[in-house]
Length: 155
Ligand SMILES: [Zn+2]
Ligand SMILES: [Zn+2]
Ligand SMILES: [Zn+2]
Image 1 (cartoon, rainbow, N blue to C red):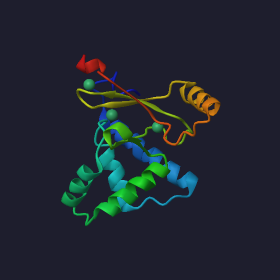
Image 2: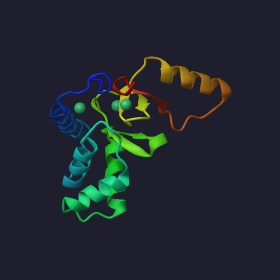
Image 3: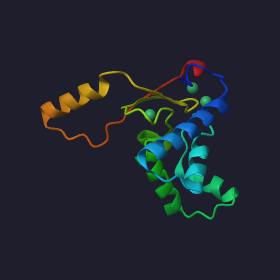
Image 4: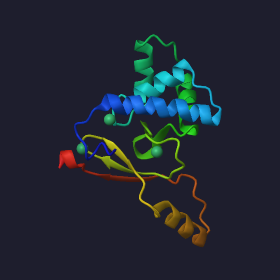
């Protein structure tokens, strides 16, 4: 399901699927989904646009969570570690992953007009990059490929 090519769509289904896969992922990996982590995940999934940590902070406060910044960052770290969200480095923001149960490498198409982000998995990209890195003796620490452009609905 690619949100950049399927505008509009039934986003409630996206949220529902995300929460179901999150629960399954936690069960498989023996991770504990707390109320705060679950709430942060739901806020990240509010749309396909990436969210920044401080926006999450404000929203959590208005939902009655007494959450200081470290609490939110810890929840995000948990979600990242579990593979439930991805961090978009160039935007300093987070988006939900819709297939956390599959081991995958991801690339991101980021629309500079509407800021929507589509996760794609172009086969061979990350393998080619790590092969080249190996040849130059380069140690990759952040393998995320982020490609900026204009999405179909903004063109
Ligand atoms: Zn959606
Ligand atoms: Zn993903
Ligand atoms: Zn766009």
